[in-house]
Length: 342
Image: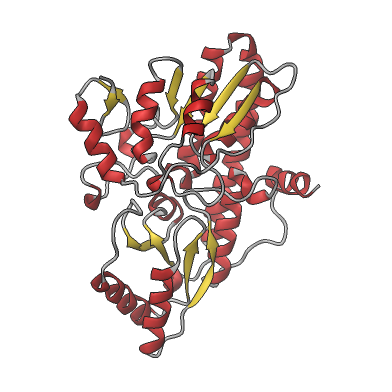
């Protein structure tokens, strides 16, 4: 049987490993959450693409253009660590010409469904071309890689090339379109990477501590110079202990950190506990804003795109921690922002 290896790739390593993969990320959510509405398919569209998460689907939309119809299994506010595939998910994936998933064990118990789909249609892990030396391997994640690679924009650019190649392999007639679109999008991502780095650098040195509910922002911190602390681990299935919360309260009070952050796809109760713990110690820490971690924002909004989500996150963090956010985005990002408002 085909199953997922340590990296999340398909390989022949037995049934037991598949069960272990499901346990690592956990899944307590009941099936039945509907998939997002598909992007309307034009007359020229060649292939139906199903993506597990919005960030992956956004790559397909930007690179595939009118030649693809894209549907995301998980939409706004959905936690992929705790998501169980519904019968509707099985139907849309069965009908797909190409299935794109992030991998690195992000999709939890969708793993067995993805394995089954690989026997009947094209299935591609978009992170499989990223050099393993660039992947985080936190000791608390039982020897597996951190899947939240999209928070280092330079790494997500590599995933974009994997999507380009997957579309070309499935639809060779669209090679020129996919190549040109991917090259244009790569320029936008390069500017986004520079923007995040430059804007984050304005945060005062003593304030460069980013506290969130779960450990989704490790790549962000490594790439852009912030110390990231989280109450829960890589997977939201892990439990936060009172000891964990108290240790973070100690850090917030000692370092006089001004703000902490909630996440759109994670309950905020542990962050609220931090705020109350600091208050009892005589230190005021505020909720600096809501960040998008494992899911993008609503469709039709800037935050419902990868570029808009990343800009929202960095701007929110920088403002809350005392840095400076430019009034107008530079270069292609400025053009993108103006276009997105229309």
